[in-house]
Length: 159
Length: 159
Image (cartoon, rainbow over all chains, first blue to last red; front, side, top):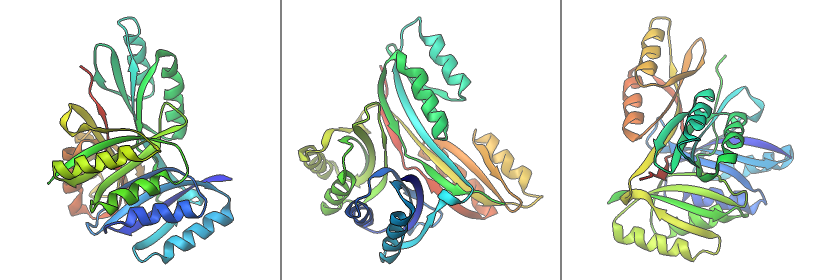
């Protein structure tokens, strides 16, 4: 079992997401993360789907996705050189004493303090999975209140 | 019609995404963007869903979501003070002449050059919708090759 990053270009039509999510769930795959957004073409959306599975079953999913009318193209980025980033917003409990420590953690990881309240501080980080993991480990002892993550997005790197 | 940002905490179970996407599509809503990622609790995922609709129908969708067994909570962030960010990777055609201009655009918007090839340059930006729009308008004349966006994620701001 390995993580596969599929980049799926789809027609921007009603119910496409439901059809794709059902197809993947129907094949017994769990979706690790999924991000859908607009593209350079207003009639198309791009989904970045991270699934766990062996190569053979991921091959099957790709074939089935390609058969859907609304799917324009499917790219498995796992085997190509690619950029892979995720955005995370992480709200952590803060006291006057711990504030400078948390600001320092954000600085070290090239993250930003996106919001600073009396009791909480929200750190915004963009990075690969290793960097996201490091942030979560570093802030854990302070008390994590809320996390929201975009899921991974990826693009093939250029030669 | 207005954009509503729903933050939905769900059990991290098989097929949940398919059920939620079907429910929303079944109510005649189009999903503008959707991002699903892990949370501070390994048994739960958080979905940020942006839908277009009037208040009354969004209220209906919230009710229906709350009825799903796998849904832990639904928050409509639209009416609260909230942080709202999106990550975009944008691959643009480049020549030796246009390279400095594109690097300058990235700098001005506090974006990064995430990959630089011979023919293309990939700009990574995190921002609100206005900033993403500005980037797209500024790079358009150079020739956009590929875009991948995470969809918006949001968190309530602290007092």
